[in-house]
Image (cartoon, rainbow, N blue to C red; front, side, top):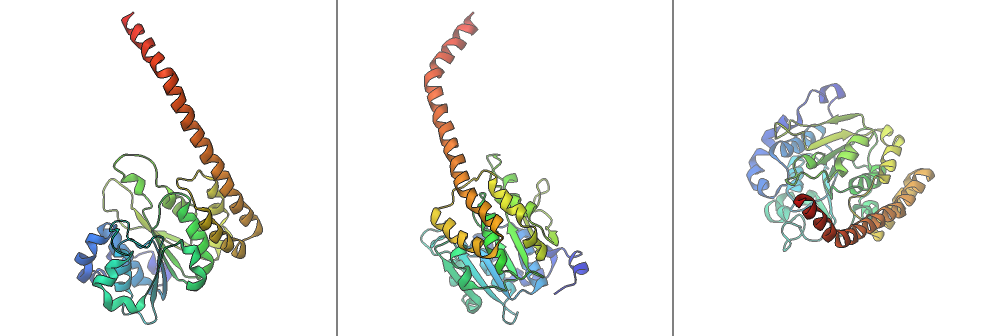
Length: 303
């Protein structure tokens, strides 16, 4: 592993690019990353030489292929990939991660794939000593934060790295809406020894991928992440997933953190209920007052 002072000087998107070059054209059509993002993932793995990698969010398997290619000559290195769905959401007739099975069979001896559930359901089986995490899942708060909180107790506390994709996805959305903030919340709030990003693929927008190195302080100052669970959620969390997360949070975190975690779920259900009530009220208002409003405007303009 590189010394800290050396790491800070590395532009990971430029580090050992030749490793990715031979498979780049095969991976690119199935990867949801941009060019510098792919090279950044390749470079940071080549620099850190991790042995146990966890990937959460597989989709077609473009990221899995990049990781497996990067570790193919690292003795004992293995990739554990988890996808919430059995099928790739972009290719619903194919299983999640199909690209590895179709194009990179020679690398499958280093690959373990878990499909059809949240990562919290598989962590005890995957086990500890994870020294590299690739987190690229829902992007809707609170999913990335919940996933990371569950995974953190299984990571090495002195040298592990987390790569987080789509930390600025809201800057690239066509409709201009400010949503998909989950990755930015986590990247901003997490306590980490270092945070690094590549040069953005777009001149006017921030980098959309980043990495941070965790330490004992990441767990010690995890209160920020629990507090962020009170920020209104962009997506619901099924009760079955929340229950599997709850078992991990109760086992590995402080009682007051577990209490806040348990309180967040009904609180967010309450907020979502208020949102539904507001929408219903707005519909009633428009139905009742819209004709009168147009009548008033028409006569006001005529007058």
